[in-house]
Image (cartoon, rainbow, N blue to C red; front, side, top):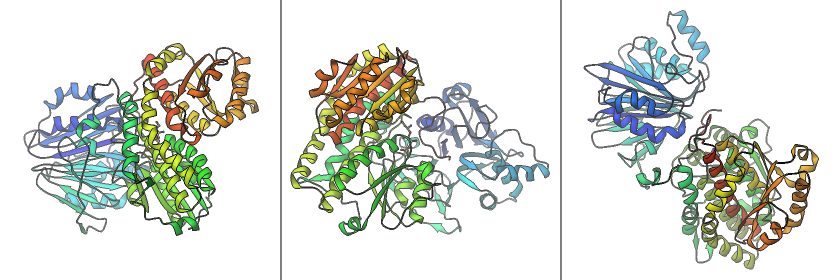
Length: 610
Ligand code: M6R
């Protein structure tokens, strides 16, 4: 979850590190720190609790910490509260080593006790501090040897950046189960959690694999595998612009990313539709494999899981094959029924979510074929799956996902059509009508986004509610799950989403005068049933904000207190339109409540700890 960056080159390191951290701050933002080495001042460390700006102010934008090699870290606390002392870099007792870390050292207690017996004093509550002291313990004038011994001794997940005052021309990077990249420059090199930290300086990157250790100097990067065999790592060129990871005039990344959705959706589907057919050249899975497959398991977390819930409805309808959707954190431990005849579709924006990654590895171990839907190119899930379909959403910076969700849906629709075609499960007319409507969706999404002022007005009516319920049936229910998550994530309002038919099995007891219910009723075949549920909550005093299609809007308005309509579309494609007012509502409510929208409390963009 934390963000790490390291620089070695010919420029002053501190401003570059702070700039990199600013771009990584979405990974964790409870404290930050840097360590910079210079021959005159030795290893200097500056750390501060709070947002990166606090640290930056403390060291005058980096001017107080001179040197051309260093490490930076922005933290999402796991072990030890957010504080100056628990912030990284962590120093070894001798002051020789500084370490930044993303991940968790699982056996840190045992190592800490061992080191304490050797007389080492600890100053923080972090698991990372043991690594710094252990480096001291093993160090006998050979930095690499000490690092290797430490890596053998520790258990858990890590991406490390290490600097040693005795070898001030180099950084060492090491990874296991936490993302780490190398950025290559002319006369400088970087290590970082992801490319956003380095894109301003270089587009040439390599993705480290588990077990890799890299040694970076200003002019060279050497990469070794876990057996210390030199690696010839592939270099990739990042193909998006620096501006894609900047706010571009918007107040928040979330607002920008909401508005980018029609274009992102277009970019995701257009290259994959040729001559009236869905073409998924990047897939190796063939018609025979699909015919053999007896079940699809969808695995994901959070909003990606909500895409999975939509996918269950959509794929079962199109393919007539059983589709099960599982939370990755549950899948791992539920003894899942998976066989070589199972296709696992793994959905992840970051491609690094540890629960999803671990579930995917378990599915593969059980023999399943894995197709992943991922946004971040070169991420671990993308690299470890049998097939990957990228969502071409560009960098998503706001913690609350919007455009990744929409482009994941786009890929699900493409997969549904493509598989149905391969399996002869769809007639030509239906295929054509779904495909044509899919291509019309970006324009319709634009129409929905044009209503943002109206939704802002509704937000001003409802932002003081302390509890908001979302109800829907079929895909409307799936959208309700996402609407509810968006709202609670960024506005901190308590919220629940229910399949509308479930209300009277318990939840309706929570409905009292003044409660707000958001009723999603776009699904034409279930409109009347949903409206009966609306009447039920209204008769108990609830305010109802309804969401439906243009053609059903007038009917809905007879019953609800406020309504938003989206252009008519096929039922199965409704989520792409209905989710937009849900995102806008959450955004404006959070704005009116003065919340920190892009960096909500306690959260981080990429959840790389279990
Ligand atoms: O990167 P992933 O798609 O694997 O992330 C999964 C969830 O952590 C993520 O969707 C989370 O729920 C979002 N913050 C929701 O907006």
